[in-house]
Image (cartoon, rainbow, N blue to C red; front, side):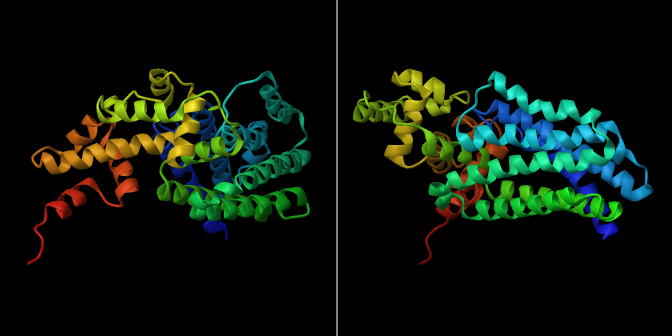
Length: 338
């Protein structure tokens, strides 16, 4: 158990660095800056906690009883809440009451060590109830997230088990508790990586599903047919998808709509979110160019249709077509068997 816990703690530290460097990019959180910045903060906090766990399990050094560890521990639940809210509620707005979520973190240094851990997990229990309720509220969108919901469900069970252990302190042996706690965080990191690999743009999909769930209709005074006709013209004739800076706000302004109106129009009339719609437009253009320009490099084609990097192009192409651009070009150009 001790060896496994140290391995998972080490993996968590490595994974936190990789996630910070590769996942929390603007293109994965195009309209959720709050979620992106809080996500970076959250993985940094979890990585630091796992570092303290690793040192404790390796040498017995009691960093786990320091004020810094207590502050980090109390930062996890509010951080996860502030990270999840824009994605699960379809909104991102800073309000004065948001600062109330910093109160547990401010109080952490003043708590006696023997009360700090159980108190942190008691606070976490409240936030866990909110998360479970928010996920349940998205049940109408579950057809989009079969695998992802399974992963999140397992993660919630892990969090629940950790909460039960934390609230049981000091009845549980300290060394055993921190072995189990470090292992639980490590397993959560594994599951998060699995979810991200399955759906690289999961934050965008969650935000779009939340928008469909909570938003009230904004199209009462909109000529939807005319707006769709104009949207088609901008995409097919003007090819505005080639602009890598194009976002929902800029496109909505060209159509004389608000961002919420454009989002609802695409969701209700096309059955997909804005980000998926824009990717499909770019991928359709790229498919044409892959066949029409066999000497052009895959990267140059991806950049010409609006993608900002090869990895973004490959991820989107695989998501839409189920294969890489190179494989698509090879299969399509292959002569039919006689």
